[in-house]
Image 1 (spheres, rainbow, N blue to C red):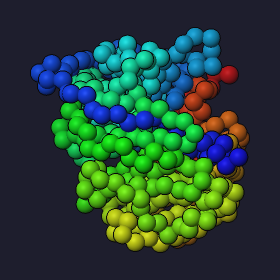
Image 2: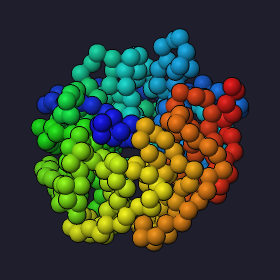
Image 3: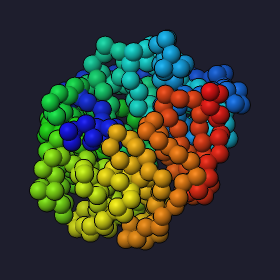
Length: 386
């Protein structure tokens, strides 16, 4: 079924948006300190990375498991930071977030080595709280709670203005969501839009220049990409140069990336080859660039500016190909890069900070690998002790 293939290739958090709760009084919000050097992993110590966001070749953030996620215990997700390219990690969980992370979920969004946001949906709670740090996780400020038991995406334009996409449940390909906005760096959130079209599972949100924002989805039939031209207050279906007939069995849209005035959107319609949609005018017009056949139906495309990008070849069920691809002309042409490591079908994930420097890991297996030549060779950063 197309749904199984799409969901295996695109991370989708389910939910249903509700009306916003009243924000707490600003004076009552808690600023808590986390000992950034108090829970460091020793060099070479196993680290189970669930999600990685490197902001440079040396500095980065991750959501790590507190213990082996495949073990007999009940591990929790914890935010952690590194300053040495992932060789060592320091857990920087806000104390106020610890009880929420027990049987809860978390979403991490990092802007720099110092600035990050942690959205937490705690256990049985039907609300989401965002924790904000501007000093590398040493101190966190807790936001007001907003309705929604699952955070789907966080997007910021600078360090003050941001958007939060939340949901509360999904079933049968339906997932209504709500959009919240902040003007003070994530301390206070207010409802911008509610009851957005519920069809399709939402996969991401991104905002760029000129008040333009995007919400992407994975669909069992057709496709859905929503666009806002007023900072997230109103949303409508985006006009894309992709015929509905190309997605009779469903399409996966995303990730959508904004690099200055240029917008990149990968569209996958299994079993057909994926296409890359490129706009230089905030989505008013698009050009269509076919992806290389060897990139697979679900390539993981990442751009670092209007010209340079990398594509990780991927097929159904997370199968990673033996070749990656580089572009220096915004996706018009691609160069094959044979990989020096076999990734197989174990669910390898990737995060590149440039077309040359990237990292790969498997969420259920300790270990982190780094490349400095687009994947021609990979070196163990945090060894797999097994």
